[in-house]
Length: 87
Image 1: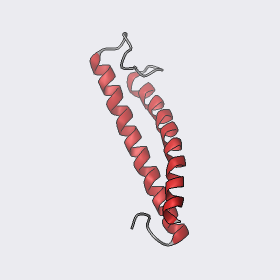
Image 2: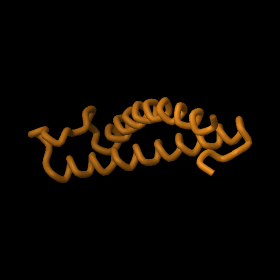
Image 3: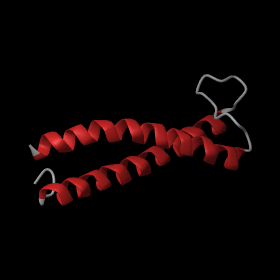
Image 4: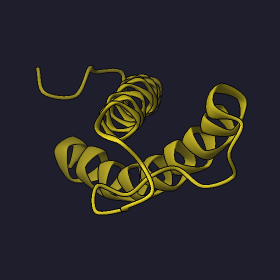
C-alpha cells in the first residue's frame, strides 16, 4: 500500500513539478537574459550559445525542483506510514 501511495503522489508531484519548474525558468530567464521568451532550439533569432545556456538552465531548474518535490513526497509518505518509501 505504501508503494501505491508513493507512486500516486509521484505522478501528481511530477506534473506539478514540471509546471512549477517551467514558471521558475521563465522568471529566471527574464532576469538573466532580459527577454520575455526563452529560445526554442529551432528559433532562428537565437544563436547557439543562447540556446545551449537556456537548455542548461532549464535542465538545472527542473532537476532541483524535481529533487525537492521527490524528497518532500518521500518524507510525507514516511510521516504518514512510519516507513521510508522503497525500503
